[in-house]
Length: 523
Image (cartoon, rainbow, N blue to C red; front, side, top):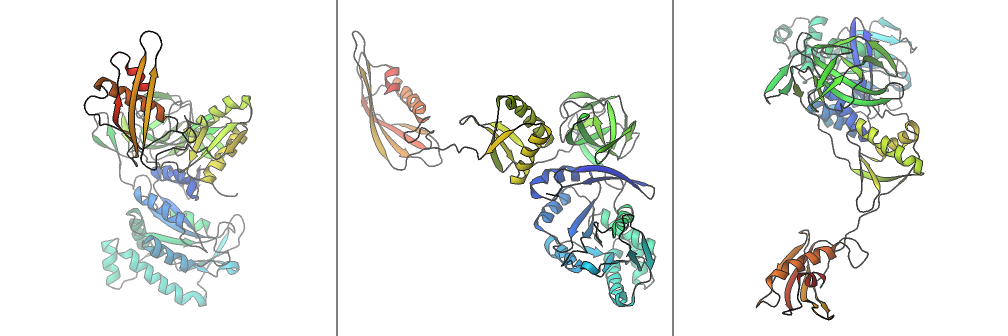
C-alpha cells in the first residue's frame, strides 16, 4: 500500500549531533504506534501534505503530542504536488489546530515550478538541484519574492520576539535582531510548546530536507532541555529522573518487535544512568530481573552492535524475556516506575480459524506474539461460539495482522465476520403454568406453580415472590428461581440465552408427602 504501518527507529548524525529518529504511521488504525513513540521522544516533526494541510488524523496525532507535551516543528511536504499551497497549509494549522504557526521559510514557486525556499532568518534563497545528495545554491532573494519575504519576516519576528525579554526590548527600540537572537527566541518558543515553526520542501524530489535537519538541531530540545520525567518509587512517592549518566539507571520499554534473525527486540528509551551489555536490570512493572545479552542501534533493518548506552539515548535490547510495551526498566537497588502509557480499546473484531490441524498450534503462537507487540490488538476465544476472535483498531489494522500471520509465521487462516451471539427476551407479558407430578409406587414427585413473565428492559433477570397463604411453601421458592435461571440459558426461539426477564410466582399448590425442592425446580 506504500504507507507506514509500524514505527521504524533509526539514528543519524548531523553536524556533530546524534539524532534518534522514529518514523510513525499516519493512519488512524495505528494510533498506538504514534502514542508509544511520542511518549519517549523529546521533539517531533509534524509532516503535512502541501495540498491538504491539516487532515483529520493530523488533529488526532497533534492531540496525542500535546498530551505528552512534545515540542514540534512542522514540515509542509509534497510542495511539488498539483494543488500544493504553503499558505493554505499554515491557515489550516491556525484554524483547525488553533496554534501559533509561524513560517520560517517560504517556498519559491509551487507544484511543478517549485525550485527552492527562502530562509526568513538569513533572508537568503536556497535553490535545489533535486539530486539525491540535495546540493543547493545560496543566492540573494529574487526580486519577485522580495516584498513577500519582507512581510513574512516581520510577521515571524513579531511572533518569536515575545519569548525572550532582552530580544523583545531590542526589537521594540527598533534595532535589527541578529540571526542568533532570532534562533534563540524560536528555540525557547518551541521548547515551551507555544510556537510551531513551519518549513517547506519535497522529500521525494530532495528539496528542503537538509534545512529541516538544521531546524531539528537548532530548535528541537536535546534530552537536557526537556523537564525531568516523573515516576514513583517503591514507597509510591513521586520522584524525578534527570538526564544524567551518573544517576541510577532508568528506562522505558516502548516497543517490542519480533526479528526473524535475533528473536525478540525490545526498544528502550534511557532516561538516566548508563548500562553495559551482559548486565542484569530490573523490570519494576513486572517485578522480574532481565538480562541484556546485546545492545543494538537500529538503522531501519540493519543493526549496529554497541557496548553501552547512556541517558537520553534510544536503542534495542536483545535478551529480554518478559518485558512488554510500557514497562519500566531500572537499577535493582533503585526501583522506579515511570508514568504509564494509556492505550485505546479495540473497536472491531473478526473471527479467525486455522485452515488445517497443523496450523492450529502455529496460529495460537502467532497470535500471542502479535498481541505482545501491539497493545491495541486483543485475541480471545468466544465462550458461546467457540471461535477465536481477534480485535483491533480498524479494518486495515486487522488486515495487516492477518497478512503478517501468513508472511512471518506461515500460518494459513480463514477470516470471517464473527458469529453474532444473539439474545432472546420477552416483548410482552405472559403467564404460564408449570406442573411436575409423578406417581410411582411409594413416594412420588409433586411440583406445581403459576408464573407471570414480563419484559424487564436492561435490568437483567429479576425474580419476585408473590405467594400468599402458603400455597407454595417458602423452602421451595428458591428452587423455583434456580429452575428458571437454568431454563433461561436456552431460549424458545433459537436456543440463545434469554435475558431481561421479570418472573413473578403468584400461585401454585403442593402435596404434603410428594412435594420436594427438585420437583419445583423441574416444574
